[in-house]
Image 1 (cartoon, rainbow, N blue to C red):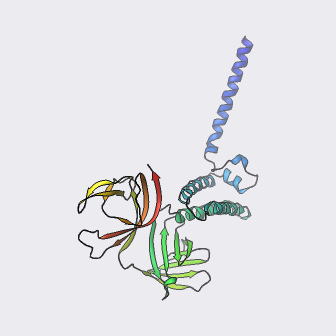
Image 2: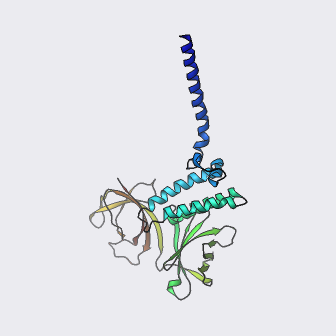
Image 3: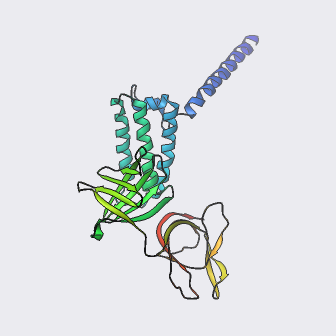
Length: 293
């Protein structure tokens, strides 16, 4: 009987020691990247990320940003995000050729995170701003700036779009894309697009004062009184604010009961509006999210 108790105590002690060892090993794993490090190959960039706390943190941040972008890309046609992400991972893993592998991997993560935040409007943009490039309207540039790390802009010319990154050591704000560049200084921009010659483009203020704004719209209408009794949408400009009645309309936006919306709108001042009309015109630019309540 004593022998049985002794063996039982030894067994329990062994179990407790095993649990303790596992527990002591978990914190490092918990701070690892978003993928399973037990499956990576020796000498790979993935293993380098597993062993480096800074790179692991960047990988976890990337996973979160990618998840947000995936929600925005649900209706993307053709679907590009997954294929592009696979291509980016392949490019990241090419950092094994670099003399400074860690710096190469860090740079890959920073650029990709900034790209996703700008392309999918995961951060509020500043703009759009309109630049006139010569006498041909099709050459004009529309630019929206994003406070990513590094700063980015999305430039549109006709049917073409370019994502550019800012060179922080350049005066006046120089942005560089794949085959495009945008160097802005005091309301003028030197623009190179594709293989064309550089052009001087001038900032053009819109005919009416125009701005963009992010709005949240609640899931139900409320009774309100404008010129007469009516139903109003409930809106706010940030998540911590309280809902307020919106008496006007938003062009191109169709409200559906039971959904909370996050949208971007363009706001234009209306000159000499009728007495019973708003002095501002709201137009939908983009539905950022639509969640059923």
